[in-house]
Each structure stands twice: as C-alpha cells, then as structure tokens.
Amino acid sequence: MQPSTAAEGKGPASPLDVILIPLAEVEAMTGRRKTAIYADLADPDSDFPRPVRIGRSVRWVRPEVTAWIQGRIAARDAKVAA
Image 1 (cartoon, rainbow, N blue to C red):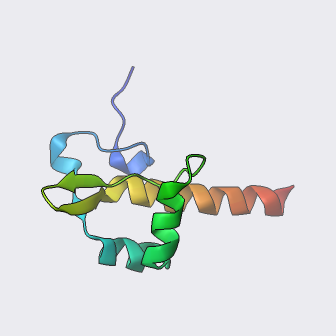
Image 2: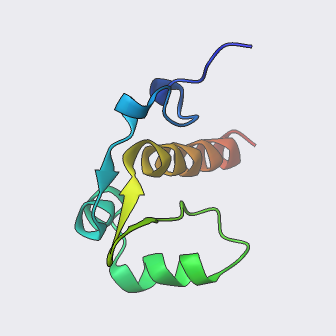
C-alpha cells in the first residue's frame, strides 16, 4: 500500500504536510461564513472537516479542507455528467 499524499486529496502524507489554518482562512477557501461552517459541524451527517482544538483556539487541517472542496467539485461534475 502506498502512502497517501496531500496532492491526492486523501490527507497529509507526513507531519510536515499538516498545515493548520484559522476559521478566517476556511471561510475564504470555502466561501462559507462562520455560521454555516459551525452548522455543518453540529450536523452528524455532515462531511465537513472537523477542526483541531489547540488550547482555546481551533484550527482546520488545510489538506482536509482542500479535499472537501475537491469532493464538492467532483459531486457537481458527476451530476452534470449524469
């Protein structure tokens, strides 16, 4: 089995690939506001990436957010092709 890579959208390949980003960057990457992000986190059926708590703050793993975005694009493309 080959290790996954961040470029494949399957998560980080090594600890050096783990980049933690704040909510503001998650909002910028996804185009979603804080309330929508936290609503997804409250929904147990949501596939939105879960944050990592560091002390009193929370951060998201950038490759996980990128993979979520790529998944949304793939789902859109699958609907268009169907």
